[in-house]
Amino acid sequence: MLNVIAQDAGEVAAKLHFLGEPEWLSQGRAFDIPFEGEPRAVLEVARTAARGMTADINAVPAEGRRKKLLVSDMESTIISCECLDELADFAGIKPQIAAITERTMRGEIEFAGALRERVGLLKGLPLETLERVWRERVRFVPGAKELVATMRAHGAHTLLVSGGFTFFTSRVAEAAGFDAYQSNVLIDDGRALTGKVSEPILGREAKLEALERSLAKLELAASDALAVGDGANDLAMIQRAGLGVAYHAKPVVAAAAGAGIAHADLTGLLYLQGYRDEEIVAS
Image 1 (cartoon, rainbow, N blue to C red):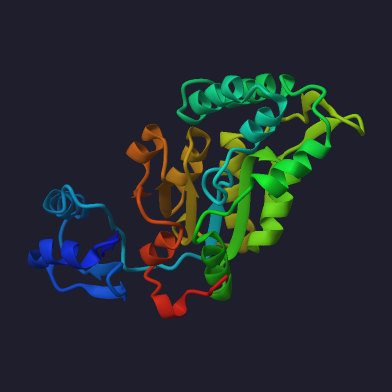
Image 2 (image 1 turned 90 degrees about the vertical axis):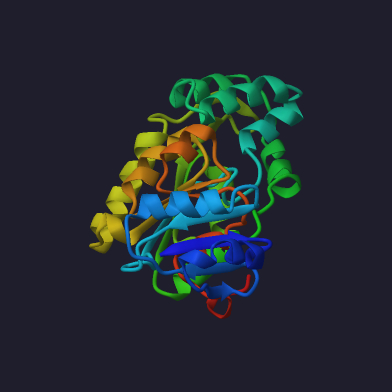
């Protein structure tokens, strides 16, 4: 199945008329074109035909399209910010920490060491700063709550996994409606951060292990899972899942993922699964 999501989807459909008639999932925004043939070849032809247009074009199997497990990264995926960078902003050192974050998410430096280094720079930061970041900086990406609510309404289990911190993942998971979450824990002395994070640090392998545990517990196959994220520490789970999606991702992730959303919001993950507008649960 060729899946297309675009702001001007009608124009894209006209460009792809030679592949078949569109089956509209969202009028003027998202459609499918069933096809026979080698997926990579069809995808290349479609993307070439639509070159210069703002569109997310992916090839997905029609069978087993709606997934029974969602495993999602949090920062820059479900929410629009990196919480550690925002804490650093209140500490007056955001450029220094954000530069390390960017290199980490691009896969240029090892995650655990980079996390220890960044947290160490926040030693002495008052605990009330975490509440300020949650209240003033954390914002949900458009479509995040609809994605979780719709998949849960159709029987899927939803898991939020993050290399970030439980203070934020617990709140994001509750507000977005996730069934469960996992993340790292910042250590404090009751008044301020100590500059330490609980060990072992949860990163790339922990996210993959969370996916594997969920599959085993729910008695599902990897083909039943959707994994989504934007950074290098998401890549292992993205490559393992039946539908692995690079969402507005770093180049190393976009190049290696089976599917990608570079323009649409998170409702694009529902269209990838064949959901129509009338099936999407409003937040």
